[in-house]
Length: 337
Image 1 (spheres, one colour):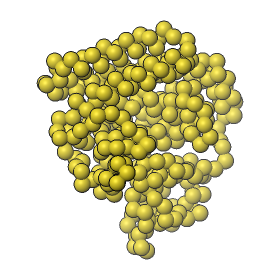
Image 2 (cartoon, one colour):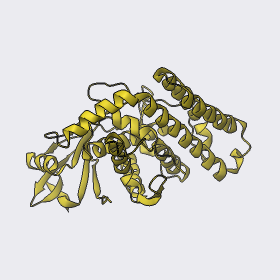
Image 3 (cartoon, one colour):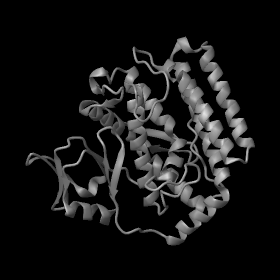
Image 4 (cartoon, rainbow, N blue to C red):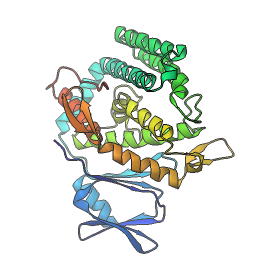
């Protein structure tokens, strides 16, 4: 089993990163703030960018350590990548299999996503007594169940996309009821997020998608060639596809951050345009708790064993690679128990 190493999140835009004697060194205004063995680093995510030494970038490429650059608002900007490695025949097989089975893959993935949305609603209904008789939450669960049935019956990718969109609207229509404090959430807004909950959801979705993209490249797959999200230059479509079935964890994480009072309005920037973004303190809080979550254990439904949550992108990517190679008859989508 792969060992979960450290992901280094650089939130101060005045940080300069370098490599010294096989150590990752972070300096702010010339003062060393962090020095850790490079061998203990799995990924580096920079929010804002002052500079990064060529030696460090070369080391990241050599050791296949993901080095990504993200805007302070959480929008993916770029990543450092070197020569494409891995089995070229696996990538050819990926293209062939996806072209042949894209509808079946999309159908199963969205069915798994909807099942996991139901799990989030049921978990909250169990934890919050006031929701146990809530008719809107019950109606949303029934609607999602019906969506699963309809998805499993269709052979049309357009129909799958339409069902997914309608179910997402219904799900997020009651998502605001899952917050126990003064937090308000009316609907999903993305570009830009218009409230603190949407700001955190978008931020964590970006983190998680980047982790899936790195995992796919690690197992030798092309993260840009997917089966559900439209192919677009610069988009890791396959990472976007596989993250769909595990978004429930990002949503549960967001609920926990607000319901336990870990985030307040002081952790956000409210722009005159209506956009809402995490500020520096808010990002640090979210990243710290996300890293803690990655080290927690979950029971993997297919492997029937406990793994660290942070390894889930690698486990699912490896299972997808096995499916592409013909070692599995179907790709086992992740269904949260």
